[in-house]
Image (cartoon, rainbow, N blue to C red):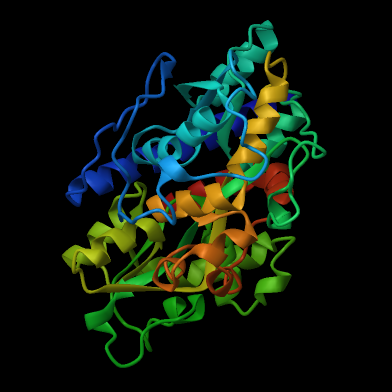
Length: 396
């Protein structure tokens, strides 16, 4: 069991890290200014400032003036330091601006940054030399890591989850932002009746044209295939894998590109190489705002999330819990969503966001209601067998 979970973790991290790295590439190709696209090899103190990620937006309140109820004592954690990890680049710039710097200013705690590496986390825990305190991981990794006893159980008496979306609350981690995989297309190819579901994507006669599809089983193709085959969105889990592959067999001859990098879908659409594809919507939104004739639908999208966890053996479990609680406050969540186009985990964060910003966030009520959120426990139980079967099917 431990060997299987270890292999699963390596697979998840490799693909999650690749997704993040290619997001940075996409933004750079789009001409977005990123002053600190880095993944440090050693911990570095948070710098005094950083450029926000695109699409740029003004926070709901100047961050230098931002206050958070309960965090009004600059000596709260004076003299303490925690190490927080994430994925580098534009995302980490936004986290620094929206979360790390306000936490330091309001509590007196110092934050040292490092790059998430789940294999390194396991080595730390098993050697008894844990240097990290809060780690940003893909939520798909939380349950496998918990089963391997790598994480501290979260004490939810210290973390206010009253208005956090309930599916984000796990024993060993809590989700703090969402991202989405949705159907995207060229508007000029479907001017009268745009595609609005996976059934439309599968309908090659009603919606003709070349298609692309991602090569990762665990980020949407299985769910999309079942939705295209008529399974109601609220009845997807447990996934009927055999039915999904029968559905995939019907669309496979019409897929001209199996994309592997997050930069590809928006580029394929922009270049006219394909007319529709599944895509990570933050990427597509960037090129839409630059004038590309693209659009997407939230209907039947696949939500995913990142979570905050505490490595087992952290020397600062008390401050780590306080940091996680701070990161989930609606004021902080709203500020992050105005800087970076991922969706808040706190339902009240949307109250202060302008309508035009809510429209592009994956977890805004109007968008979230149209999408499916994965059953990560099901995926933890079945990931390796589904991925092996899917990879063989793609090349077979």
